Length: 222
Image (cartoon, rainbow, N blue to C red; front, side, top):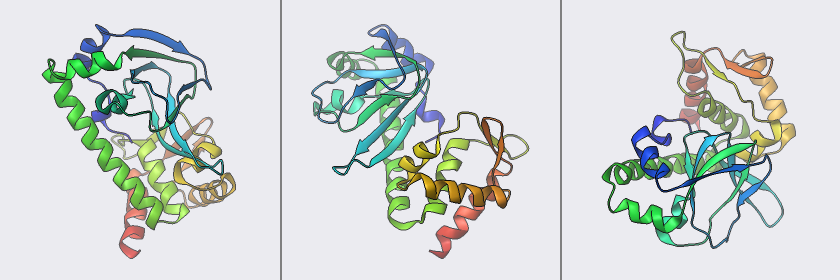
């Protein structure tokens, strides 16, 4: 889910910082849990967290990864309902925490926050709509390609992109609804075709356009 609209703008973060406090969390720490009656809102200042759901059978599906200058927890602050997903720190992180009632009150007096939040939530709806489409209509290979394109973000002038933080095979499997062994096999096929390359601890997409075209052709034929 790579887009500038997900990043909290400087003016919005300045408003939130006046009404929040910083909190440090450790890798693996559970920050939110499904059903928890809490409504604080969080902005990641450093590090990253993962949003997921776990089925009754214990299978985890990662909904999204959240990095610096991105927000989570806003839904409970807005509608007063319990938490709808689990959030776990992927690495040692620093968060800005805003009390839910404070955040809700700011929406009525800070237009810059309200307008950005509306755009942000609209983007989330579109993103989750695409995820539902992928999980219900695409095979594992195309789902992996779509996830890599999201992680890659905007290409450079040469049309390439680099994924600096490589998710583990297990993380990728959880994101696209499959198992680690299948991800390993599909990833090897992409490397063989030259659509992605490994460079140390990074993944390089030599041509974002070529990978996107591959995914588009699959979508057109399915």
